Length: 440
Image (tube, rainbow, N blue to C red; front, side, top):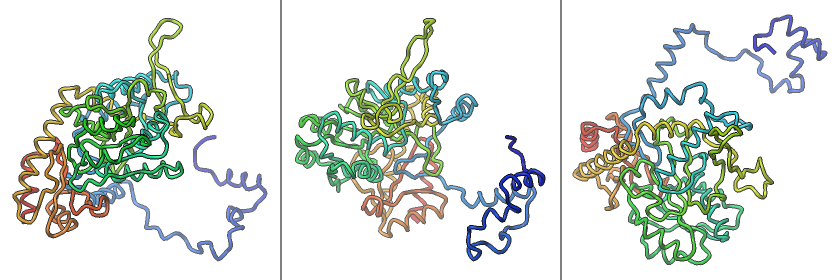
């Protein structure tokens, strides 16, 4: 079929074929009173240059300020080569064909992604990606239930991203599983309170490090507390933080999960993003999604295959590890290119810059009358401030000066405060200007 406009003659032939006189006859079953009785109220047509000018004017109204926004999506630097490579026609699809072995280039890219994730996390095995950070955390909880054979209880810290916790509740809502949330009024968990919540019915302890408020948890001790009762530890981590903090594998995590947006993907209004999940070797067959393996073809040449894919599309639904049946191929490719370009030294430098700049910003904002930096804890790249004028007022004050901060935590996390994130992108001049704007 040619994808061209229908000519009047072609329309007449189609109407004759189905035995009606006009296109209007196709809609006779719709009551007359429900039909639009006039032409659509559309503006006059524009020429291409006029339309482009109009679109630019509309887009300019939404120009973003200098970004100090946090809460799980961050304004990190993206090398130009990431866009160039990820936009190649050979790669530019989010889909892996069902005859996957015919797509050796894509499979190799996913294999390299898995390798890089294992190097980044210090874990043994990674899958080829899933949807985003909340999904990867929830899938890890289901993994823990299958591994421990404890299906009735999951313990999660209140300092874990509230949207991730909501996704988790949705996942287990029909599994008769109780989700115990440990309050973190001081920004991090009290290990004594956590220990008292864990027992021999707990499938896993879920923590975020650095956590939603930007603070560093006592991650090693928390992982050990989980293991002491036979539960697994699930650690949600910031991929950039692995440049200077201990990796999940080094702090004792059984399963490591993350939102991978920071690795070469723009903020782009909230998605699509990248779910990262990695674990220890002995749990490999409980991973959701796909695992790419390296093999040899009949000619002895290296090739890549879908080694494990316990998906509901390939095996009996009740035997599948998850209903996750695809992977974020294009976004995983961007992460692969980003990590390859920066390397270990680049990730370390990005992490150091984030940490230094965030702590400088927090120290300067703490000097401003009427603003408090709450949660007196070590932070990585974001922190929470509170204004005597209220959260919305301080967000609008920053916006009026050309800065985007937030989100407000009042509705999101029940905390009177606003998140401020400082990545390697921000300069000292920008930080000082933000401080000055909030001081006025």
